[in-house]
Image (cartoon, one colour):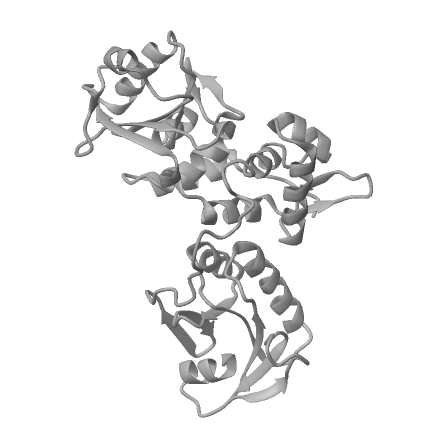
Amino acid sequence: MISQRLAELLDVDRLEVCLDADDPISHTDRVLRAGSLVFVVEWKGSGRSAAISAAMEQVRNRAKGIDGVVVPLVAVPFMGEVGRRRCADAGVSWMDLSGNSRIFAPGLRVLIEGKPNRYKQRGRPSTVFAPKSSRIPRWLLMHATQPLSRREIARATGMDEGYTSRIVSRLEDDGLVVGDDNGTIRPRDPDLLLDAWREAYDFSKHHLIRGHVAARAGDALLRQLADVLNHGPVSYAATGLAAAWLLDHFVGFRLATLYLAEEPSTELLSALSFRSEARGANVWLVIPNDEGVFHGATKLGGIRCVHPVQAYLDLGAHTERAEEAAQKLRSEHLRWKTDG
Protein backbone atom coordinates (compact mmCIF):
# COMPACT_ATOMS: atom_id res chain seq x y z
CA MET A 1 0.00 0.00 0.00
CA ILE A 2 2.84 2.42 0.84
CA SER A 3 4.61 1.78 -2.47
CA GLN A 4 1.37 2.16 -4.42
CA ARG A 5 0.45 5.42 -2.71
CA LEU A 6 3.94 6.87 -3.21
CA ALA A 7 3.87 5.91 -6.90
CA GLU A 8 0.57 7.75 -7.27
CA LEU A 9 2.00 10.86 -5.63
CA LEU A 10 5.02 10.78 -7.92
CA ASP A 11 2.86 10.04 -10.97
CA VAL A 12 4.82 6.94 -11.97
CA ASP A 13 3.59 3.45 -12.85
CA ARG A 14 5.72 1.67 -10.29
CA LEU A 15 8.70 2.08 -7.99
CA GLU A 16 11.78 -0.07 -8.04
CA VAL A 17 12.17 -1.90 -4.75
CA CYS A 18 15.81 -1.71 -3.73
CA LEU A 19 15.34 -3.12 -0.24
CA ASP A 20 12.25 -4.38 1.57
CA ALA A 21 11.56 -5.57 5.10
CA ASP A 22 11.33 -9.26 5.87
CA ASP A 23 7.83 -8.59 7.23
CA PRO A 24 5.72 -7.35 4.30
CA ILE A 25 3.08 -5.94 6.63
CA SER A 26 5.38 -3.67 8.64
CA HIS A 27 6.71 -1.69 5.65
CA THR A 28 9.81 -0.88 7.69
CA ASP A 29 13.22 -0.19 6.17
CA ARG A 30 11.82 -0.06 2.65
CA VAL A 31 14.06 1.53 0.06
CA LEU A 32 12.36 2.52 -3.20
CA ARG A 33 13.76 4.16 -6.32
CA ALA A 34 11.99 6.53 -8.69
CA GLY A 35 14.34 7.77 -11.38
CA SER A 36 17.26 9.51 -9.69
CA LEU A 37 15.55 9.65 -6.30
CA VAL A 38 15.93 7.00 -3.62
CA PHE A 39 13.24 6.94 -0.92
CA VAL A 40 14.09 5.45 2.47
CA VAL A 41 10.68 4.72 3.99
CA GLU A 42 9.76 3.92 7.58
CA TRP A 43 6.18 2.95 8.38
CA LYS A 44 4.66 3.53 11.81
CA GLY A 45 1.18 2.39 12.78
CA SER A 46 0.72 5.49 14.92
CA GLY A 47 1.12 9.19 14.21
CA ARG A 48 1.99 9.99 17.82
CA SER A 49 5.00 12.22 18.40
CA ALA A 50 7.13 9.48 19.96
CA ALA A 51 6.56 7.15 17.01
CA ILE A 52 7.30 9.93 14.51
CA SER A 53 10.51 10.86 16.33
CA ALA A 54 11.71 7.25 16.28
CA ALA A 55 10.86 6.91 12.57
CA MET A 56 12.73 10.10 11.69
CA GLU A 57 15.83 8.85 13.44
CA GLN A 58 15.60 5.49 11.67
CA VAL A 59 15.23 6.89 8.14
CA ARG A 60 17.99 9.45 8.61
CA ASN A 61 20.40 6.82 9.91
CA ARG A 62 19.44 4.45 7.09
CA ALA A 63 19.91 7.17 4.48
CA LYS A 64 23.55 7.72 5.50
CA GLY A 65 24.67 4.46 3.94
CA ILE A 66 22.97 4.93 0.57
CA ASP A 67 24.48 6.68 -2.45
CA GLY A 68 22.57 9.10 -4.65
CA VAL A 69 19.82 11.60 -3.97
CA VAL A 70 18.19 10.10 -0.88
CA VAL A 71 14.81 11.18 0.47
CA PRO A 72 14.06 10.08 4.07
CA LEU A 73 10.30 9.47 4.26
CA VAL A 74 8.03 8.65 7.20
CA ALA A 75 4.64 7.03 6.51
CA VAL A 76 1.75 6.78 8.98
CA PRO A 77 -2.03 6.30 8.90
CA PHE A 78 -2.54 10.00 9.73
CA MET A 79 0.05 12.70 10.43
CA GLY A 80 -1.00 15.17 13.12
CA GLU A 81 0.10 18.77 13.52
CA VAL A 82 2.95 18.03 15.91
CA GLY A 83 4.33 15.25 13.72
CA ARG A 84 4.19 17.50 10.66
CA ARG A 85 6.11 20.20 12.46
CA ARG A 86 8.76 17.80 13.76
CA CYS A 87 9.29 16.34 10.28
CA ALA A 88 9.57 19.81 8.75
CA ASP A 89 12.09 20.90 11.38
CA ALA A 90 14.17 17.76 10.75
CA GLY A 91 13.98 17.99 6.94
CA VAL A 92 12.21 14.62 6.68
CA SER A 93 9.43 14.05 4.15
CA TRP A 94 6.22 12.31 5.14
CA MET A 95 2.99 10.87 3.79
CA ASP A 96 -0.09 9.36 5.35
CA LEU A 97 -2.70 6.90 4.18
CA SER A 98 -5.40 9.50 4.75
CA GLY A 99 -4.20 11.36 1.65
CA ASN A 100 -1.88 14.03 3.08
CA SER A 101 1.81 14.38 2.24
CA ARG A 102 4.81 16.67 2.28
CA ILE A 103 7.61 15.35 0.10
CA PHE A 104 10.41 17.72 -0.87
CA ALA A 105 13.49 16.76 -2.89
CA PRO A 106 15.57 18.24 -5.73
CA GLY A 107 13.11 18.79 -8.59
CA LEU A 108 10.20 17.48 -6.55
CA ARG A 109 7.60 19.18 -4.36
CA VAL A 110 4.48 17.35 -3.23
CA LEU A 111 2.29 19.09 -0.67
CA ILE A 112 -1.23 17.86 0.10
CA GLU A 113 -2.99 18.92 3.30
CA GLY A 114 -6.49 19.09 4.71
CA LYS A 115 -7.53 15.46 4.26
CA PRO A 116 -9.36 14.12 7.36
CA ASN A 117 -8.11 11.25 9.47
CA ARG A 118 -9.52 8.02 8.05
CA TYR A 119 -8.18 5.97 10.94
CA LYS A 120 -9.67 7.57 14.04
CA GLN A 121 -9.92 5.12 16.89
CA ARG A 122 -13.30 4.65 18.48
CA GLY A 123 -13.63 5.40 22.16
CA ARG A 124 -11.16 7.21 24.34
CA PRO A 125 -7.62 5.89 23.78
CA SER A 126 -5.49 5.08 26.78
CA THR A 127 -2.80 7.69 27.32
CA VAL A 128 -0.07 8.54 29.80
CA PHE A 129 -1.34 12.12 29.52
CA ALA A 130 -4.69 11.46 31.20
CA PRO A 131 -5.48 14.02 33.94
CA LYS A 132 -4.00 12.15 36.90
CA SER A 133 -1.13 10.38 35.14
CA SER A 134 -0.02 13.63 33.51
CA ARG A 135 1.34 14.71 36.89
CA ILE A 136 4.33 12.53 36.07
CA PRO A 137 5.35 14.05 32.70
CA ARG A 138 4.70 17.50 34.19
CA TRP A 139 7.10 16.80 37.06
CA LEU A 140 9.67 15.32 34.71
CA LEU A 141 9.55 18.42 32.50
CA MET A 142 9.78 20.70 35.52
CA HIS A 143 13.01 18.87 36.49
CA ALA A 144 14.14 17.76 33.03
CA THR A 145 17.89 17.86 33.71
CA GLN A 146 17.62 16.15 37.09
CA PRO A 147 17.50 12.33 37.18
CA LEU A 148 14.63 11.26 39.44
CA SER A 149 13.68 7.98 41.06
CA ARG A 150 10.20 6.59 40.81
CA ARG A 151 9.81 7.04 44.56
CA GLU A 152 10.80 10.71 44.36
CA ILE A 153 8.29 11.29 41.57
CA ALA A 154 5.51 9.48 43.47
CA ARG A 155 6.07 11.52 46.62
CA ALA A 156 6.34 14.82 44.75
CA THR A 157 3.14 14.24 42.78
CA GLY A 158 1.15 12.68 45.61
CA MET A 159 0.62 9.35 43.89
CA ASP A 160 1.05 5.68 44.70
CA GLU A 161 4.48 4.23 43.86
CA GLY A 162 3.01 1.28 41.99
CA TYR A 163 0.85 3.50 39.81
CA THR A 164 3.80 5.83 39.21
CA SER A 165 5.98 2.90 38.16
CA ARG A 166 3.37 1.72 35.64
CA ILE A 167 3.10 5.15 34.04
CA VAL A 168 6.89 5.52 33.92
CA SER A 169 7.15 2.12 32.21
CA ARG A 170 4.67 3.23 29.57
CA LEU A 171 6.63 6.44 29.03
CA GLU A 172 9.74 4.29 28.55
CA ASP A 173 7.93 2.02 26.09
CA ASP A 174 6.90 5.11 24.10
CA GLY A 175 10.51 6.28 23.98
CA LEU A 176 9.72 9.42 25.97
CA VAL A 177 11.92 8.77 29.02
CA VAL A 178 15.16 6.91 29.63
CA GLY A 179 16.57 5.28 32.72
CA ASP A 180 20.08 4.68 34.01
CA ASP A 181 21.80 1.97 36.01
CA ASN A 182 20.87 3.68 39.28
CA GLY A 183 17.18 3.34 38.54
CA THR A 184 16.59 7.04 37.98
CA ILE A 185 14.83 8.42 34.92
CA ARG A 186 14.64 11.62 32.91
CA PRO A 187 13.04 12.72 29.63
CA ARG A 188 14.86 11.31 26.61
CA ASP A 189 14.06 14.55 24.80
CA PRO A 190 12.08 17.13 26.81
CA ASP A 191 10.87 18.81 23.60
CA LEU A 192 9.50 15.51 22.35
CA LEU A 193 7.79 14.82 25.67
CA LEU A 194 6.18 18.26 25.63
CA ASP A 195 5.09 17.87 22.01
CA ALA A 196 3.58 14.46 22.71
CA TRP A 197 1.65 15.88 25.66
CA ARG A 198 0.38 18.91 23.77
CA GLU A 199 -0.81 16.59 21.00
CA ALA A 200 -2.89 14.60 23.50
CA TYR A 201 -3.98 17.54 25.67
CA ASP A 202 -7.62 18.60 25.64
CA PHE A 203 -8.37 21.80 27.55
CA SER A 204 -12.11 21.24 27.11
CA LYS A 205 -11.95 18.32 29.57
CA HIS A 206 -11.69 20.87 32.39
CA HIS A 207 -14.92 22.46 33.67
CA LEU A 208 -15.07 25.93 32.16
CA ILE A 209 -17.21 28.81 33.44
CA ARG A 210 -17.33 31.72 30.99
CA GLY A 211 -18.28 35.19 32.05
CA HIS A 212 -17.61 38.90 32.01
CA VAL A 213 -16.07 41.34 34.48
CA ALA A 214 -15.94 45.04 33.68
CA ALA A 215 -12.35 46.24 33.31
CA ARG A 216 -10.34 48.69 31.20
CA ALA A 217 -7.80 46.19 29.87
CA GLY A 218 -6.57 42.62 30.29
CA ASP A 219 -3.81 43.38 32.79
CA ALA A 220 -6.15 45.54 34.89
CA LEU A 221 -8.75 42.76 34.75
CA LEU A 222 -6.22 40.17 35.92
CA ARG A 223 -5.08 42.31 38.86
CA GLN A 224 -8.68 43.05 39.80
CA LEU A 225 -9.47 39.31 39.93
CA ALA A 226 -6.26 38.49 41.80
CA ASP A 227 -6.91 41.15 44.44
CA VAL A 228 -10.10 39.35 45.36
CA LEU A 229 -8.76 35.81 45.10
CA ASN A 230 -5.61 36.57 47.11
CA HIS A 231 -7.83 37.31 50.10
CA GLY A 232 -10.29 34.48 49.56
CA PRO A 233 -10.44 30.81 50.58
CA VAL A 234 -10.11 29.33 47.07
CA SER A 235 -6.68 28.59 45.63
CA TYR A 236 -6.17 29.90 42.09
CA ALA A 237 -3.56 30.32 39.35
CA ALA A 238 -3.60 32.27 36.10
CA THR A 239 -2.99 30.36 32.88
CA GLY A 240 -3.18 30.87 29.12
CA LEU A 241 -2.67 34.41 27.82
CA ALA A 242 -2.75 35.87 31.33
CA ALA A 243 0.08 33.55 32.39
CA ALA A 244 2.07 34.39 29.26
CA TRP A 245 1.74 38.07 30.13
CA LEU A 246 2.86 37.47 33.72
CA LEU A 247 5.86 35.44 32.57
CA ASP A 248 7.00 37.63 29.68
CA HIS A 249 4.77 40.71 29.28
CA PHE A 250 4.92 39.51 25.68
CA VAL A 251 1.49 40.50 24.46
CA GLY A 252 -1.56 42.34 25.65
CA PHE A 253 -4.68 40.24 26.17
CA ARG A 254 -8.41 40.55 26.63
CA LEU A 255 -9.25 37.11 28.05
CA ALA A 256 -8.14 36.29 31.62
CA THR A 257 -8.12 32.57 32.37
CA LEU A 258 -7.75 31.33 35.93
CA TYR A 259 -7.82 27.87 37.48
CA LEU A 260 -9.83 27.61 40.69
CA ALA A 261 -9.24 24.70 43.07
CA GLU A 262 -12.99 24.34 43.62
CA GLU A 263 -16.33 25.47 42.24
CA PRO A 264 -16.78 29.19 43.01
CA SER A 265 -19.53 30.10 45.44
CA THR A 266 -22.18 32.69 44.70
CA GLU A 267 -20.43 34.96 47.21
CA LEU A 268 -17.09 34.64 45.43
CA LEU A 269 -18.61 35.33 42.02
CA SER A 270 -20.29 38.39 43.47
CA ALA A 271 -17.00 39.61 44.98
CA LEU A 272 -15.37 39.19 41.58
CA SER A 273 -18.23 41.14 39.95
CA PHE A 274 -18.49 38.12 37.66
CA ARG A 275 -21.49 37.89 35.34
CA SER A 276 -22.03 34.53 33.65
CA GLU A 277 -21.93 35.14 29.92
CA ALA A 278 -20.67 32.82 27.19
CA ARG A 279 -20.80 35.33 24.35
CA GLY A 280 -18.31 38.16 24.77
CA ALA A 281 -16.71 36.53 27.84
CA ASN A 282 -13.47 38.09 29.03
CA VAL A 283 -13.00 35.74 31.99
CA TRP A 284 -12.70 31.97 32.03
CA LEU A 285 -12.87 30.39 35.47
CA VAL A 286 -11.61 26.82 35.12
CA ILE A 287 -12.18 23.98 37.56
CA PRO A 288 -9.36 21.54 36.65
CA ASN A 289 -9.91 17.84 36.10
CA ASP A 290 -6.86 17.21 38.29
CA GLU A 291 -5.04 19.25 40.94
CA GLY A 292 -1.75 18.66 39.12
CA VAL A 293 -2.32 21.85 37.10
CA PHE A 294 -1.21 23.76 40.23
CA HIS A 295 2.13 21.93 40.54
CA GLY A 296 4.96 24.43 40.12
CA ALA A 297 2.68 27.48 40.40
CA THR A 298 4.31 30.60 41.78
CA LYS A 299 3.45 34.25 42.46
CA LEU A 300 4.60 36.83 39.93
CA GLY A 301 3.93 40.44 40.82
CA GLY A 302 1.51 39.32 43.51
CA ILE A 303 -0.51 37.13 41.13
CA ARG A 304 -0.34 33.34 41.27
CA CYS A 305 0.64 31.82 37.92
CA VAL A 306 0.86 28.22 36.71
CA HIS A 307 4.18 26.71 35.70
CA PRO A 308 5.27 27.55 32.11
CA VAL A 309 4.62 23.94 31.07
CA GLN A 310 0.95 24.23 32.02
CA ALA A 311 0.63 27.70 30.50
CA TYR A 312 2.08 26.41 27.23
CA LEU A 313 -0.41 23.55 27.07
CA ASP A 314 -3.38 25.78 27.83
CA LEU A 315 -2.45 28.38 25.21
CA GLY A 316 -3.47 25.83 22.59
CA ALA A 317 -7.11 26.50 23.53
CA HIS A 318 -6.83 30.28 23.24
CA THR A 319 -7.12 32.62 20.29
CA GLU A 320 -5.93 36.23 19.99
CA ARG A 321 -2.12 35.93 19.67
CA ALA A 322 -1.93 32.71 21.66
CA GLU A 323 0.30 30.82 19.23
CA GLU A 324 2.86 33.62 19.22
CA ALA A 325 2.71 33.73 23.01
CA ALA A 326 3.25 29.95 23.14
CA GLN A 327 6.31 30.16 20.90
CA LYS A 328 7.74 32.96 23.02
CA LEU A 329 7.04 31.05 26.21
CA ARG A 330 8.74 27.96 24.83
CA SER A 331 11.82 29.80 23.60
CA GLU A 332 12.29 31.68 26.87
CA HIS A 333 11.11 29.31 29.60
CA LEU A 334 11.01 25.79 28.16
CA ARG A 335 14.52 25.25 26.92
CA TRP A 336 16.44 22.28 28.22
CA LYS A 337 19.98 20.96 28.01
CA THR A 338 20.28 17.18 28.18
CA ASP A 339 23.01 14.62 27.70
CA GLY A 340 21.06 12.44 25.28
